[in-house]
Length: 175
Image 1 (cartoon, rainbow, N blue to C red):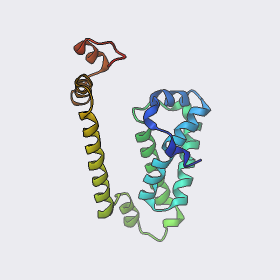
Image 2 (image 1 turned 90 degrees about the horizontal axis):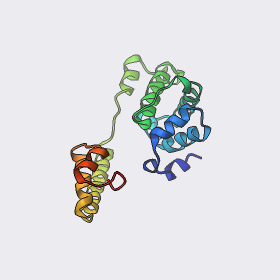
Image 3 (image 1 turned 135 degrees about the horizontal axis):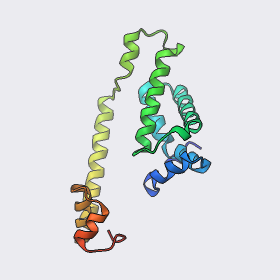
Image 4 (image 1 turned 90 degrees about the vertical axis):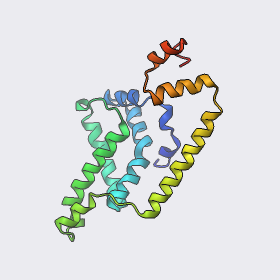
């Protein structure tokens, strides 16, 4: 079940619609949110705590609480961001109160809150970002001029689809 999360494309769905369906009690939307974001949550939780079982338990607890409290939740701009913040809070609370950290003094537990990456991890991340950026620029170079213009207006000028429709004098679907 956990590996299915990696197979689902987060970009291929409307996450706001998915979240709203979840808030309305749609079980399949709830399951989809879980599958979409589990691996991101797990990786982040491991970075914070280094305790795989604690992370798995906390993610499960997070999703149980979300389901129980869905009527009181509001819409979010980023499901992933919302879930990461919620997981972080729950993990930090658990690490401070859990007997598994009783051998640490208060200062050491507080230091767990500052996320540390090794130099190797930082270098690898930068290399991957650089490779992705190069691939993206190459792909953009192969686009027709009109499509490049749309990308420029959207991502460099932050224009809405409606604004681009007016500027380019093309229909909404074409934008």
